Image 1: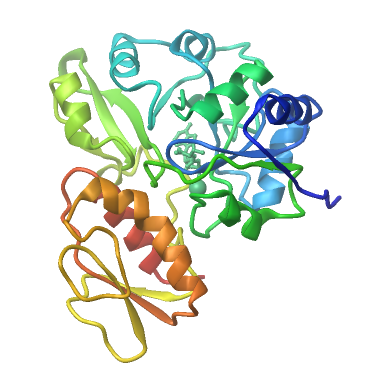
Image 2 (image 1 turned 135 degrees about the vertical axis):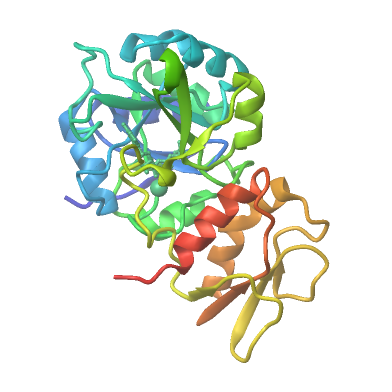
Length: 321
Ligand code: TXA
Ligand code: MG
């Protein structure tokens, strides 16, 4: 099956059409505040299988379910006190919580790759929110890129990667945050406490989460027992090679700068990490399109959103299969 991909405007007609496609088990790419998502009805096995197929994504890598409110989220997952606090502080917004899945959730088992937990979030983008409202059900949505490639932060990126493989793309302009949501899991700590574990750094900085929880959050990689299965080393890869912590531009390289440096494209001339996150995938797509063989990247501090930026860059630089 190779559908002709419709381009939808984020107006009433567009949302009605998108909701109709989702109800029929079809796939619609839509903007969120982080990156574009490839949405399908999370209760429909055929739709969810279609997401894996369209992306070429391994079936063992579970999906994030998007819902319109914390009240809806708690009908799908167990809802401990720490979840309530985090949802109150950060939803709607770029935080995904991994929590035990409730029995009888009605979700397709393909969504969770048959894990006992579900990754769930309430997106903040007004177009995503309108779409969830028009559809009225849970939407499973990974980033709307072919598996292993750079995530899309505008409708054109989605079309370049997935045109002809999905039913529709809703164009809502560029994404504001620019890197995916922070994925947070939980595990039992000493003395009956719960420890939060960042499984993927993203749009909400660990420091912000620590301020809300009043406790340090751990990094998933430090503990092999709990991780986001999709965190494969080579991921977010542009066509070009990537060289990190570059202080200069070598022969044949294009330089992706940060701060006051002479370069081909700058993530943020003023060294603002939020601006850099918003520009990251855009600039990688753009340098790739210029035919770079190697993209060199200036050093980025590891604080705040820098953790998410460096995570994506180190995956982009990792050896490819
Ligand atoms: O910002 C985002 O999170 C975007 C937008 C579209 O919402 N979505 C996104 O989805 O980045 P995706 O599929 O590209 O990344 C989802 C990640 C994967 O690494 C997956 O392994 C992890 O979430 N994940 C999903 N369910 C999980 C679970 N139950 N336990 C641990 N990790 C899980
Ligand atoms: Mg992704």
